[in-house]
Length: 363
Image 1 (tube, rainbow, N blue to C red):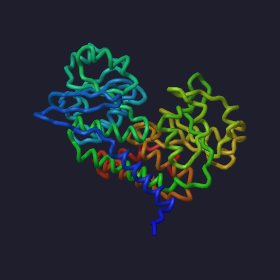
Image 2: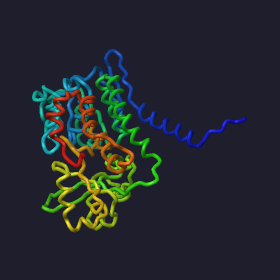
Image 3: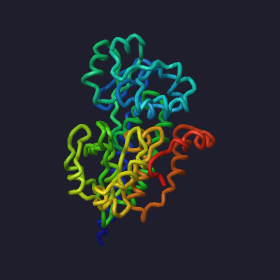
Image 4: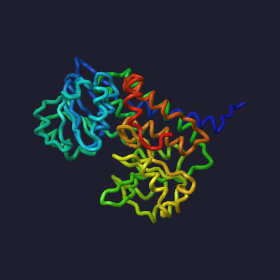
């Protein structure tokens, strides 16, 4: 008698294969007499004749790469310079975990190639969208450049593998990826067969120019992935296919009339903005406001919605807001685990330095 395999069994098997392939898509470190070979986010093969000891991180959004780089203990010893300053100044957080940070040179975000070359780096790390501009100029000078994306959960896990190869820390790479994969699997398992998905709008709020405006992230960015993975319907996805935020007027928001509205406010306390908008008669027309489902996205030193290591905290928080009946995640405990396991911070430092920095509608 032929064995009968249920559709459910087949689905589970395929799901496990999919997750495993994501987890195993890690560049391998090939070392021969000290050489390192790595494939970066642009699928370029980079050959280093020795492990890099002088590393520079440059370009806009450098904090995303730096925060990922510092997930590896001792990585800061190899950093000689980085781009900093502005609202997302990497120093605000890195000074807590690197006692030697003051000895690193701080560069402009659009630093010239000659200034980078003068520091004689073994390797420069930057976001892949800078390849044709900043990266190409450095490579013309013979400087090795490695590009990272970090823009989705999948590419984040891959890029952790790239950093682990560069730093020759395979065991730490597995630890980091397992931390993320375990939490990602937990959320996906609970949301994969939902009968109802709330309509969600996640938007950036800005008061530049004196009046408030909303803008949506592209469909391919991690913010959209967070909503989808958490069991929500991102109402803006089909309208935002570009490479950056798209401004949307209130009439469009009213047309979407989402069940849940989540505000991101870089450099501000998103919960204060959410509270203000709830009191605005115009905003009270929205279903999300009527049902008290307008939330400010949490942040500490940086907002948790971005392709920075904190995105996993953002995913857990979004899942809890979209489906509280499925998730009972204690976010402060998750914050504690995040900083203990990934950055090695003591409970005292977390209590004294991280918790006071928390903003947004965390609880």
